[in-house]
Each structure stands twice: as structure tokens, then as C-alpha cells.
Image (cartoon, rainbow, N blue to C red; front, top):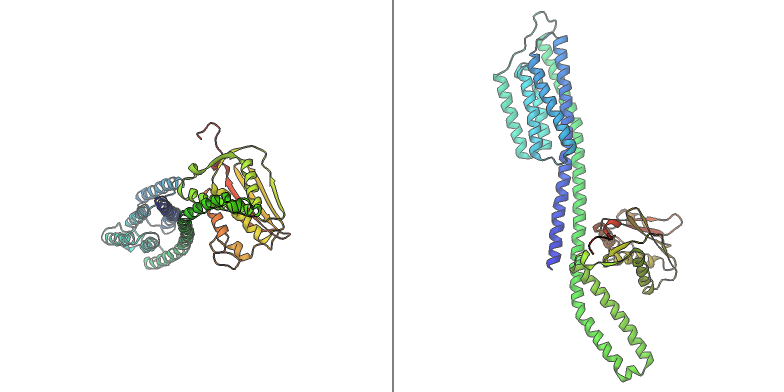
Length: 445
């Protein structure tokens, strides 16, 4: 029970780690959007300065404004270099990046009329973005900071020097500036909030997938607890039955009756098989993989596996093809054998007259393919392959075979794929990384 509780704790920790990675990935994409927005801000400031000086003839403190712009460009270049390599972005780092944007906007407005500049409404863009990107407390902090900046600009600023001979009216230009500011705010909000919303939806989808996977793995843990408990309970009656059968074989009424003795030996053989199954369950539930692994060659493992399965199942036509020429020393545990047995048993149920099992490898990947001549998979079964109770057999508890196979393969770093063959029947392919199975010749054994 202690080992199973450790498994639960490890899975919970892994799930929390995966969810954190998903959130960090979403934050990284949002940070890249802020970097792109900052480049647009730099381009907009350059265009505004050119129009104000060359078209309107307004005298601007170009040195101060260009100094702010250079600082913003340097910060954005540093941000691009850092977040190109670093993938983990926290709420604090997003908040600090937005503070830089607010600070640069405040500085530019200070040199261009303060609150009388129509582009002061770009502060609303920062507030709305903070409401989308940041946590609640950080958003309210942004609201407070922008309010302080507005109050500062209303009291302190450098007024624009309007040329006396300008053909443009100041009021008309202010109204035009308001329209331009509104269009900028609206366009940027639509573009970037759409992108940010897409990131958030993708993050929520990934989290939902992780939680679904966690629920399935917790289901496996509960099944393992039940299986190990049942195996412990069955151990005693199986041992008692073995002793009784041994006594019966030596009794004269059975020993002198060949027919009865043959039946007793058949029962004893089935009893030994039951004990082997129970031992395998306890071994898988109570030991680590390395401790319960058996050292063998890759080809010998599959030869023994096929011989054991074929001798204990009522299969009529079974083909086994091994395409592995290289002899490799591997360590397999009972879960791999049980995984293959589950797929073969499922195929045997729908196709007792035609069944093929193929083994091959490609570089560092082991392929195990089971092909049958049955009716194939239904579309909804393929769409939800590997989910519990996803079966067309119509009986309680059906559909757990492929569910267990999927989780075993995923735990070992492999995959499970299924498809319907063009000429009829179905094919299930299991893949496992050889790196997790092959033993190094000079490594520890």
C-alpha cells in the first residue's frame, strides 16, 4: 500500500508540473505578443515624430524623445533575446514588462503636452491588456499606476510649441488625434486580444487534456489497488488447493485411475497458471521495473511470448513474423508481456480464424503489430482509442484492455495506434523505445 500511495503522490506531482508547464507556455506566447506590440509602438512613435515635425512644423524635444525611444528599443531587443531562449514567464515578469511600456508612454507624453495630448488615451490599452494578461491584484496595480501617471501629466508636462503661421487649427488637430488614437486602440485590441484569447484557449485545452489523462491514470491506480488486493486474497486459497491436489494424486482411488489422474494433472496445470498470474500481478504492483525485469534477448523474449500465448489460447490460424536480425540483450518485465497478450486476446475474440503478429525495429524504436481479419473498429471507437469502457462488445467492464495497453505503453515512453485495414480487419501497433529496454554490454546488470 505504501508503494501505491507513493505512485499516487508521484502522479499528482507530475500532473502539477505538467499544468505549470502549460501555464508557462501560455505566458511565454503572451510575452512575445507584448514584444511585437512594443515594436509597433516604436514604429508609431517614429511616424508621429516625422509627421509632427515635417508636416505640422511643431518643435519637439527630439533629443529627449529619441533617448526614450532608444531605451525602449534596447529593452525590447533584450527581451527578444531573453525570451527566445527562456520559456518560463511568470505573472511578475509580464507585469514588469507592462510597467516599462507605461513608463515609456508617460515619458513621451510628458515631452509632448502631457494630458493635452490626445494619445493619452493609449493608457486604456495598457489597462485592458493587463486585465487580460495579469492576475487581478496586478491589474489593479496597473490601474493605480496609470491613474498616477495621468495625474502627474496633468500637473507636469512640457507644452507643445505651436507655430504661429501654421495653416492647421489646434482644435481640429486634437479631434483628429482623438480619432487616430481610437482607431489605434480598437485595432490593437482586436488583433492582440484575439491572439491572446487563442493562447488562453489553447492553454485551457492542454490543461483539460492533462486532467483527463490524470483521471485515467488515477483510474489505473485504483484498478491496481483492487488487483493487488484480490491477488493477496487469492494467494491463500490457491495454495490450499495446490496442497489438496497433491494429496489427491497420492490417494489410491485416484492414483490407480488413469482418467482421474489425467484430470487432476489438468486441474493442477490450470492452478499453476492461476498462481503465475497472481504472482505477476503482485510483482508488478510491489516492485520497481528494474527489480522485476528479466534479462533475455529480444528474439528469445518474443519466441517465448508467442509460444506461451499460442499454447494457452484456442487459436486456429496464427502467424508470427520476426523481422529483427540483430540480437539485442534486453530487460522486460511482466507488464510488457501482459500488454501484448491483451492486444492478441482482443484480436482473437473477433478473428479466431486469422491472426498475425509482427515484430520489427527501426533505429531506436521497437514495433509490435497485431493484425486480424475481423470487422474492424467502429469510427467512434477509433476516435476515443485508449479511453476506459470504450468498447463495442456490449458487456460491463468492456474496453479496459486497450485502456490498460495505452497507459502501459505511455508509461514506458511508447505509443499505441489502431486503424482499419483496406481489405478488412484491423491493425493495432504498439511502439516502445529500445533505449529503455536494451542493456548496455558494459553497464551494470
